[in-house]
Image 1 (cartoon, rainbow, N blue to C red):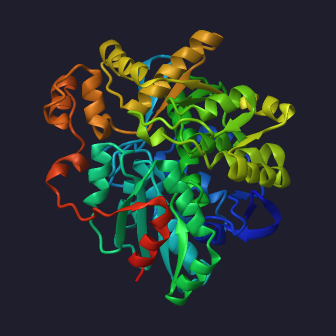
Image 2: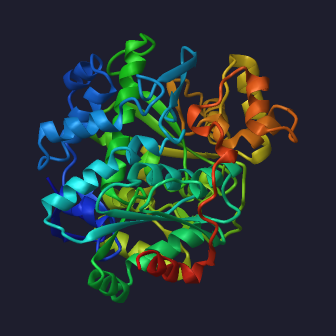
Length: 489
């Protein structure tokens, strides 16, 4: 299967080339030239597999230059004893029509592990397949979870370096500690004055700096990405939508072929886009409910067709969603509009900070997507309500989606079986969860959350505050290139 840029369909790339490059030369994102279809009989067969079997079957359809034996090895390594649950991505039912898809049982306690335990295998193999002899530097902008998951996935991987930028005051204490104490001889971490969009824009500028690329080439390096703009990062996420559907069917709360609704807490649009790809492949999904915090640029877009990043930026208790430029939306727009229109829209976004899609395009999008907003105060209320009603503890991001799903059902009367995509362990945001539950905010947050909920702290987070801080550098967004330059000398 070949891949091409969302902004130019003429030039084709292999999967290995697309994964190795990360971002197309024209600034576009790589998309597959065709979307493979999966029959209901195949989905039925997936119901009899474990998560690893499902991952292998689905990813093979997009990675035909990788052998089955190769991918099987990667899958077994990515989803093994590094997870604290053998089911890898289990469903937790709070009633017969509502399940929470727990994507946080990996080594960094967030859903980014689902892809970033796989990407290092795909990337290093892709470099070999393309004959690349230079070392790769993975450049990451993170709103919190991607950074740690990428650092953990790529630490000490031969032939790679990884450098992560995060917004200085835009991540939780746990997220920051996870990154600045990261082990590994090939890793670097730096905070950026500003918000996630500042960090993400800075990284994109570095990628598009051809003179800098030439300088790095002279030193034996080239840049690639571990953000969800990289197809090798997005593809593994498609798997857990199929897996969730199969587990719902296996629970006997859903008939094979019956549609599911998915409500997804959304920032950069990669997670929910992976579900959209699953639907295009044939998975029976009735609606995607895009859940936003007070940075509700996506909710407004789905309601009006106008994407406008020219608005106040809010720092919230669901920081991984504090994003005003949702990069992966470009892939979905390409499917509805084509490369010429996407190039025009992205040009307007860069120059004016706003674009509008035609009304007929919005009509097509609205058949698949709707949006909803949840404030910080509503988020806290939802955390407490779910624990009190269902004895189930959720984090701040999952609470946004949980509340938005309830609002969607009440407003539309759509009470079909639904999945809330749970993106992080509540212990990653322990301070805010403790506050929501009315606990002692002066106490150690992890210990207090143990006491309030009767649950256990995930092993990867134990003793986090006692680990040595290795990285304390902070730069202005305009100085990010210099930080990368220094790291690679």
